[in-house]
Length: 520
Image (cartoon, rainbow, N blue to C red):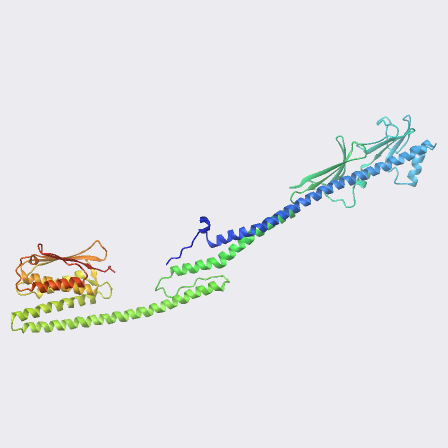
């Protein structure tokens, strides 16, 4: 009985997949949430990293602006002190020199002093400034940017003070000790730019974060730029690695199921399907699987085939012994029937009346019919095809003509026989039936021909036996034959054959369908 899987509850396409592919899909489905959680966590970590970089840019810009503002405030505060001293009668230039001598961090930049009318009082060597370049109100402080650096100006009632802070000094105060190596710090004002730190180089997948902070009350800004990679190599790895682990886990499950379990089973199945009875012991396919259960299964099939081979050998030996026994039985039966036929023939020759001789001859014909069956069965025994009716009926009709009653030896018998095989029981009944009908026809009208036809029917394992003779028609004088006994015998033989006897006395036809065997 074939066992069919019930695909209800499964998608039709999924139910047609192999077990290994099904396992791959199932593992992929169940491991997907874990991979998704890991990917989302990695993306959140990358987003936090970018936020940290942005905060760092803002903080660094504020620090740099604060450091520059502090430096400018310190310089302008020093000049306010100079202005106060000048208002008390001291000379501004002497105050600046004394301040530099006593406090080296004051007036760190280069400077120039002017009186209230704009006349120059003193200046650092190589530094030139004009009081009228940047007109200032009394008490006003201004900061601006030019090529020399960051300039500033201050005015009191008696003193104009102008100074410049060099890029080197600005770089020193704007760069913190913890400064990274991928940052730009610059001062910008109205299209002019003064680069203080220039270490940032934009790379692959990198975006620039910038932050601007105003310097004092001027129009100059301290600008900090740095790079922020949306997804760094490490972050890409942390995002891709869970996906790779998810895929690897699914592939590993598929490989384990396919290579270690399913492929060995497929090999065993192919070996079982290729095995045929009589091939001997089934060759166990080589399997590299560590699963001992599969190896045990293959060995179990091998043991079964060894058992089957042993049983087949014993069965074949038993069949051979039985065949020899049956052959011997048929041979002895044939010999015994020939002995009986010989005795009947002797008695017929010594009979004192013609009626007794005819009776012996009639019995002899039936014994001879049985002998013919055994002889033909013995001939076909090796092929196990049953009894060949064409050969049997040909030999039987020849013997019937040879032992025919006086005056019927020349009765013509026409044969039209297909190659049909039957079992022994059918052959015996057919032989007796043909003998009865032929003897009846030869006895009633020896000069009339007899026709025997055996044709294979369209129905499988069935053939039509037809005997036709004018001596079998109604009205033929058969005083020497007991019609009732003839009818009882032919009807009884048809019943043994489990066939319906079709008799047409108007045409002299006896016909019935007999069971046959398949050839081979």
